[in-house]
Picture 1: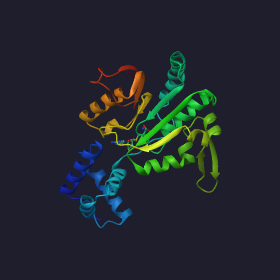
Picture 2: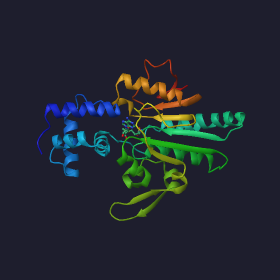
Picture 3: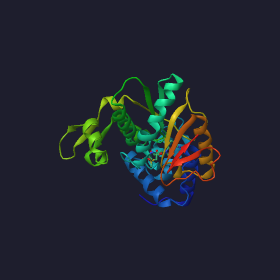
Picture 4: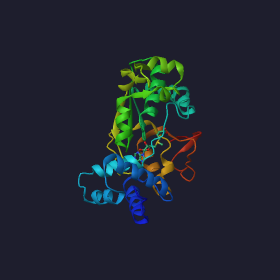
Length: 274
Ligand SMILES: C[S@@+](CC[C@H](N)C(=O)[O-])C[C@H]1O[C@@H](n2cnc3c(N)ncnc32)[C@H](O)[C@@H]1O
C-alpha cells in the first residue's frame, strides 16, 4: 500500500486531535504505519478510501477504529512501582483513619487511561493483598480508556507469561492461574481481583464525565504526554473537581504538573494532592 499524502496526514491529525486530544503533529511515519495497518486488517482499499468512509459514517464505529489504531497502549503490570508502594504505604493507612472518622466505608479509585488493564489490576492486587481480603470496605476501581480494543483485552483478564512477569512473585502466585500451558502459556487474573474493577469506555476529552460521586485516588499516567497544554489544563481542572478534598492524583514519572501548581500540591514523584 502506498504512503499517505500530506493532505490525508493533516486530516487525520485534525480529526484525532479534535476527537481525543492526542497530538500527532510531527508523527507522519507513525500515522502512516498505523493507518496502513488498519487498512490491511479491515480491508480498506487505501487510507484515503478509509477517510471517505469515515466522513460518511454516522454510527461512529469508524472513528472508534481510528482511535483504537492511533492510541499508544503500551503498559505493564506494576509500571512505576513506587506509585503502588505509595498507595499501600501512605494512602491506604491515611484513608483508613479518614474513613473511620467520617463513618464511611466507601472508597473509590479511578484508573483514567487503563489501557489493557495492567494498571487497575496491579492496583487491585496490591490493595487486596494489603487488606487481606477484608470485606468491610466498599472499595471499587473504575478503569476507563478510549480504546475499545485495549478494554476488550482488559475485560478478558488474560495475559502471557511475558506480560505477567513484572508482577511481584507473592502477588503473581496468589492472583494468577495458568489456564493454558501450550507453547505460549496464558495466565488468568483471579475473579476476586476482577470483581473490584469496572471497565468502561471514556474519552477524557469529553466535557461531562458521568460520575455521581468523588474519587479518593485518580491515576492518569502516561497519557498526558500525548496532549497539549490546553488539554492538560482542562484535565487538571476536571480531575480536581472529581477528587475528594485531600484526594490524590498520580501521573506518570516523566510527566509534570509544572504550571498547574494552583490545582494540586506535589507530595512525591508524579504524586499530587488536592
Ligand atoms: C501509554 S497508555 C498508558 C497506560 C497506563 N496508564 C500506564 O501508565 O501504563 C496511554 C493510554 O491512554 C489512552 N488514551 C489516549 N487518549 C485518550 C483519551 N482522550 N481518553 C481516554 N484515554 C485515552 C490510550 O488509549 C492508551 O491506552
